Amino acid sequence: MRRKIVAGNWKMNGSKDLAKTLVGSVRSELASLDNGVEVVIIPPAIYVQDVAAHADGELGLGVQNVSEWHSGAYTGEISAEMAKDQGCQFALVGHSERRQLFGETDQAVADKVALLLDNGLDAIVCVGETLEQRENGRAEEVVATQVRQGLGKVSGEQWSQIVVAYEPVWAIGTGKTATAEDAQAMHASIRDVLADMGAPAEKVTMLYGGSVKADNAAALFAQPDIDGGLIGGASLIANDFISICRAVP
Ligand code: PEP
Image (cartoon, rainbow, N blue to C red; front, side):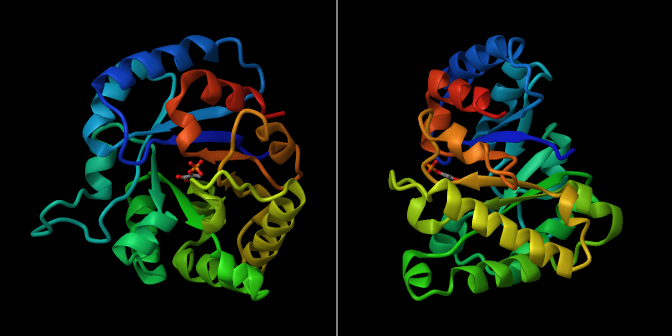
């Protein structure tokens, strides 16, 4: 049995007020969820404590990024150790916006993952191809390279702290979603890569992300290799996010 997770990535959105209202609503609905899904909120780091105060230990908490360095003179960065210290259990790594806008490389992803694992956090490692790469028939090769390099330092028991999020870049924030069949095909391909790397591939939780909404979540989550979702825009609207959490079988 793999963990089932729905994680809401607020990106650079939100406020103290959203932390109160949205987290309160999600929490009150959680009791009636009987599908075993772990619900995780990933706000901007400055709101982690606000979310924590309203989550009251009932929701998972994460940060959207951590530094690839341990500590020191890196103004503006936050470390894996600090995320842990603030009560986070999860961190996103390698989100396509970090890769595209901030030049995050697979090497940096690997370094960040290693620091997260050392600090006992779960790493949600994002991979995905651009539209051009997909149209050129290179989607699987590109994603396989991201998986091999980004997870290249993981071994043994550490695999239980890894969650892979497949997020086709062309589907993020665009309203275009991969078909359930295409998403499943890529998830199966990633699982093959993990097995080839010596990981306990059948045990690694994999999320789909990219314009997941209340009306398409169920079809995606019904796929055998899709264990939940990484949700951007729809995670900011309580009713939509709750519906997506309910859509996990
Ligand atoms: C994301 O930010 O990881 C994401 C999937 O965004 P959206 O759901 O808005 O496409």
